[in-house]
Every structure is written in C-alpha cells, then in structure tokens.
Image (cartoon, rainbow over all chains, first blue to last red; front, side, top):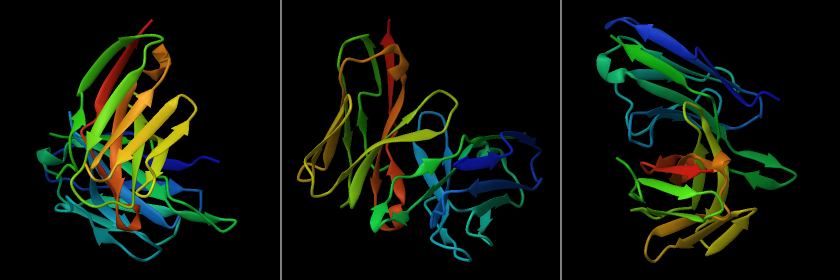
Length: 117
Length: 110
C-alpha cells in the first residue's frame, strides 16, 4: 500500500517551459488536492477534485491546470512556468467510506520541489 | 489567504517537557485537523476534532477546540527528540478542503 505517490521529486525549469506533475493514490479516495508550500507559510490549495472527471479551483489557481481522468490519478500542469511558481508542491487525497464510516483525514505525498529559473 | 495564526511560531524545549501549540481560525468549520511535517517531507495527519467536540486524546496528544473563540490547542506530553518537526493546524470546510496556518516549528533537545 503505497499511499500517495508524486513524481517527479525534484525539477528545475526555465521560465516559459511547461511540465506536468503526477499524483497517484491507491486508497480509493474520492477527493484529491494540489497544494503549494512556500517558505514560512502553510500549504495553500491550488486545485482540487471531488471525483473522476471533476476539477475545481482553490485559493491560488492562476497559472495552473489540472485533470483527473482516472479516480486514482490527479495531474497538475504548468503551461508557462514563472519564477513565482518556485515552490514545493504537495498532492493529497481524502474521503472514503469503510464499513459505513466516513474517513476524512488527508494523506499527503512526499512533495515535488520545483525551481523556476 | 491563511486561515489564521499559530502561536508560537517556534518552540524549543527539552525532552520530557510538554509542548503546547495554539491555533486560531476565522471561519466556521466542519472539523479542525493537526498535521506534522518533518523537514523536507510530506504532512502526516495526527488528529481530527469535530466542531461539536471540545477535547480529544490520541496517545501523547491532546487537542482542544473552542468554537466560540475560534481557537484550538495541541498538547504533546512527555516530548521526545523524535517529535522535532513543524506542526500545522488546518480547518476543514466543504469537500474536506484544508486551510492551513503557518505552522509551529518544534525543536526537542535531548
């Protein structure tokens, strides 16, 4: 049981380049999220998904796009990277029903450290 | 925007002492959760307290919630060097979207 897996773990981009961050969860969770963490701050929500084929904007969505084509995967795309997107990105998943009980705690991946130069 | 403030921003104690961290928030909540983050790693869920609960225990952790003051506290008893980490409170709204505070950096010295 791997939990939440993010790839890649590190990446350096040049301004204007594009990339996709991959997130996979094996806990059959309904909800998935992308957060970013900047120095001295807590995590801020970029986008989230409440089910396969659905996505919604979070607190800081500009410059990012997401897709959730399969329940277990949630992709975060940067179309034209900017230095302001230098950050650590975390994927998380939550919400499942087990034996009639709701489980809402979030499980996080290990993060992707992205530097845009 | 951040949900609120965590206090203190940093805390340094000796092994065996208790550590108390406080969190304030701004909006109504479904529940409040505490997470731990070791340096350079992902966040790990510690404990969840629902809006209709006032206190909850889990091992050496004790969490209180005062919805009238929009505040929560996390107490770690008999701290260990391995408890050294950053601790974040997060409020949960619809679809379990989490809004985090800036965190408390805890250092426990042997």
